Length: 254
Length: 254
DNA sequence: CGCGAACTTGAATCTCCTCAAGATATGTGG
DNA sequence: CCACATATCTTGAGGAGATTCAAGTTCGCG
Image (tube, rainbow over all chains, first blue to last red; front, side):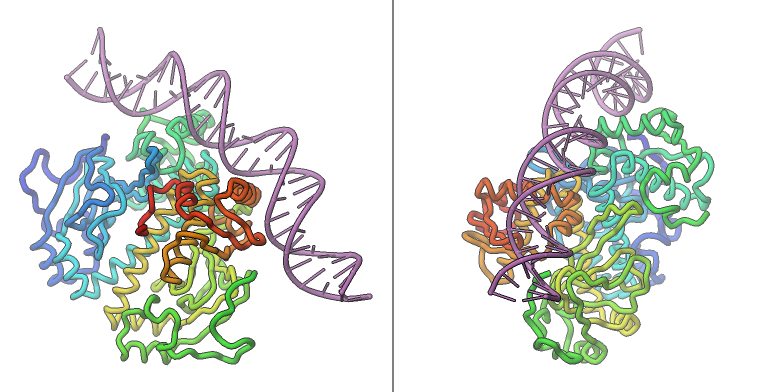
């Protein structure tokens, strides 16, 4: 519910950020665009803003645009008839939303925090995909990264204990935090949870009670500290990482 | 261990199938190739055969080729230090193996049955990917399909009961069987399991005992019948599908 | 200050896992 | 061709971890 307001003046007008000033200019699908391609995008892009909890699209509905997440967090989720829900994707700034070639999403798409999307109408974007191998290659690479992330998630859901799931999740958030601020996740990292307990449970394949209990347990043992229920302090990153069940340092140096 | 021998003469020589005769010609990454592109592939491709259980590559190792599965089944899996294993991908005929742009797989790759791969050396293939938007587009599409499949698997691992997991798995195999033989999966479908109980357990996030127990339970209740431990007969497809937890018919007509 | 939402904690239950034994295939050498 | 050895699969009993149901507690907002 609470999340970065960062970019873009408060209660604002049809906003239009020049691509050069865009915070995700070099990480999003447009990262490898040449000036000419960027001009094409610049002309057809438009922004949408959502509040935390707002539905962006339901499974099976038409989605007439694709988009990059500029700021905030979006979630993809699947729901069974009896109500069981599993989140199957977490879209952070620079991630791509939507599937070129299909005009309806098989998943529910929800804004998990205040969210700003940089949208492209489907047709023009698919045109660009055909005319510009550079963009197509970038999208393929991003999709392959997402596939790898989904596969890591399969291990988490299939084999990890509740405690390991929580530790893994916090570890990932801490890493991302560290990458953003260009520092190593070592002493006293602070992580703001972008999800409430229930959304975390949906993401981790747990119940919200189990999430709460495991977070409490980690706190009791001093692995983490809490400032309110949404802010986590990590005094010793390696201690937390060791609880995640992943091998050693998991990719980051140090 | 037992699996189709189908294509390619028995104890055979460095084999080379002309692309036009290839059983996966119109489903693999080369599906949309023009004659000229096909010629390029034809020249640089080569075949590799593996026996059931054989390791194709371990996590972190170099893989100097990418490939299409021609026949048989391959598995991608991740293993934790303490030995817990989760299969994160199941590659069936026409599926693509390997990641352009990365020369080492983050997963263990294993032949789950006798397996025939149509291999391309990495460099030439990446060249083709740059020079031929057609192939790049096809690969993007296949990757997006795999991502969707992985996301469906997240729901299975995160939220389904052991019984539902087994039913889901059998349902999927029955559908694939039906697609191959161009018929609807209705009465008396027969499915040969490409995986043993342990591999199924690794795929479904269960133990092999639980897999065995749930299969026995479905058999006792008449939802399925067994011919040996590897062959499953499905007298009423809808009854099985109803046990999977997925909504109604799950996409196929009828 | 008080209300509702979000979060925490407790107790009982249930599903799946672990450990252990037995049964059924599979294949090999005598 | 049979007997034995091995791998695979099945079944059982007991236990651990997560869920369910049910109160409490804290936090944020009007």
